[in-house]
Image (cartoon, rainbow over all chains, first blue to last red; front, side):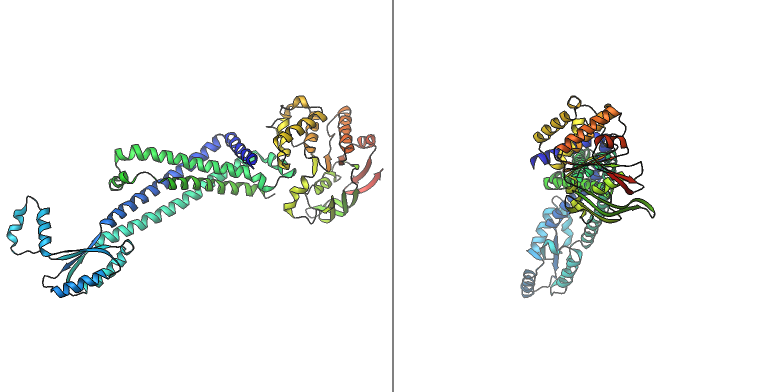
Amino acid sequence: MVEKLKYLLTHALINLARAGWGSLASIASIAVSFVIIGIFILVIQHFNALIAEWQEQFQVSVFLDDQITPLQLDMLKRRIENEAAVKAFTFTSKEEALTTFRRELKGQESLLEGLGDNPLPASFQLKIRDEYQSSEALKGLSAFLSRLEGVEDIQYGQEWVERMTRAERLIRLLGAIIGSVLTLGSAMIVSNTIRLAVYARAQEIEVMHLVGATKAYIRAPFLVEGMLQGSLGAALALGVLFAAYRFVAPTFNVVSPLFSIGASQGFLESSMMAGLVGGGAAIGALGSSLAVNRFLKM
Amino acid sequence: MIQMFHVYKTFGKDLEALVDIDLHIHKGEMVFLAGPNGAGKSTLLRLIFCDELPTSGQILVNGRNIVRMKPRMVPQLRRTLGIVFQDFKLLRDRTVEENLALVARVVGLTMPQTQRKVAQLLTLVGLSHKAQMAPYKLSSGEQQRVAMARALMNDPLILLADEPTGNLDAELATDVLRLLFEVNAQGTTVLVATHNLKLAEEAGCRTVFLKQGRIVGEWR
């Protein structure tokens, strides 16, 4: 078994070296595809971090009628407590709202002098569970709360929620489309390189076939060669991405909101990197088997 | 060892390569298949190692009907055969030793077993001193002997040799013939296709004559 593995790996490496520029071109093409796929994953990862941070801070404000009675307030509190979408909530009385407001206006308190009575309403600040933070769920919650007695207004940045949801969907969709196209493209490139290698070794394959080698036996070194090309390409792409991420991106700060979060977010997780290298190997194997299978139909 | 019953092979619609072949070769026998170019000798050999299927008829090799054999069983059959191809089919970018080792790998010999076998066979064909050379740097006679050594790497039950003395002069042809006898003496069934009637005569073995795809006579 060990000898077989050693044979496979040695021959795949020898064949990779024999193919020379062809192998290099193939590895480089895969690397380019994976750099683009990697950029998408990074952007999605940072976007998700941004959304997660935003979701953490997200709250729905329920502003109360100034005329609300203590009984109505108590009822309202209980309704909010029993609401599945609500993770936690706090109550801010009119007085507390004013105090907070004063604190925020530090040094410009004179602006409040002409106001006379406290114009700020009492309110509930609701923290919403992650799964209820879609625009549809929030619309439903808002409609429900606004029908309750003593509620004057609901605010939760409707437009932002919708925009964020739309943007996230768009990026995911774009990532999926571009990722699939690039994956297919990479497989075709490997397939072509391996096909050249297969044709270059047509006589060897023929002899092996005639002396009793099974198709699997003939196919195996080519598969390993494709997997090596794919994983080397993906690893090269990760190296390039890492260098760009560490040195270039902070200097130019091109997509500032994303990269500012990125600084705390870090590079791709090791499981994701392993996944990409594994994906490269899988694409290499796919391309290689496409080429060899076509040739072995003899 | 090899039995053919009413075997026909037609290429395309009307090119009859073999017509009603009935041939029985016993275990340990050495048989020559003689005839002019285009008589169907190579086609007959190719049927035996399943490179072609007959249009009709049955073929038994070592007791197995290869016409009904599943494609996945063909490699197993081929591993029991040794084939010397007319064009040698030696890999130009490998040394003589590596050409032989290729077969050893396919039949699953370990590295030490391979080294032993390669050394033994190169000694048999008298080419031990050329083990590290590329085949294309050898003479035709030497290439022929390398091809023979490669065909013997798997200790075949049957050796099929297609024009093994093709372009060789009389002296080299006799060398090859001697080698074939040696292999046969060790119990391997040998079937040699040749257009060289003199060689068949010199060998003094059973000879089957083919002409235009038909068996037209036999010497014993």
